[in-house]
Image 1 (tube, rainbow, N blue to C red):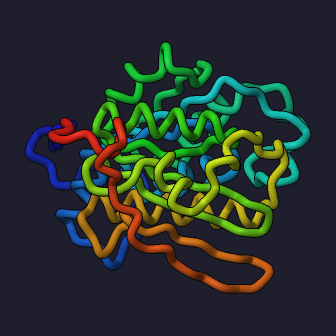
Image 2: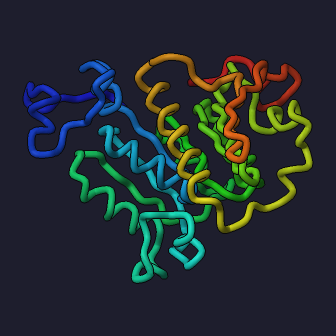
Length: 261
């Protein structure tokens, strides 16, 4: 997406009727980068919703929400966005309404569709960056496959009991999700489906890490998670990193040369 400032107005003029993004460590250029960027969150589990909340509040230009599910009682245990009266509503449509009310000027687009290989690739191709808000491991692997094929960065998260994982798949620079799991010796993990109910604080932490990573990628700030898996063990109160998650040259996904950006 190309940045546009209508009528010669500055960023301050554009947002004077909304609340200003509160990013004291970022300058005007970074805020304009955010305003010119497009991000899609695939799946709206609590991590995806947390990430969406922060991205809207920093003034991301366009945010896509892809999910075909409805709000259920199990969502109330981990999400602070829903209440009993919201059960049965579509997650993506409801989240769009709530986040639009913040008045940041973010263009929020809902994609009320199932995440699959047939219809999703064309949707993801319209955005600069993809966020994994999925719970099912097979769908997470599919998201990695699609993003590697499209040349789109994917910010991944996983909840393994009381452990939080975050990893950024950047085509041509880091391992895809399948190779990352193989390097960790977890090839069999994706054959199981994650529980529909997660530990709320863990999900919120995962979404916060994803939002921070997305902002860094867009604004070209600091070190990103590419080649490095970020892990936090809640019970041990320990952060640790697994480095060296580089592309596998014989992999048809992350080892492909000359990927389009």
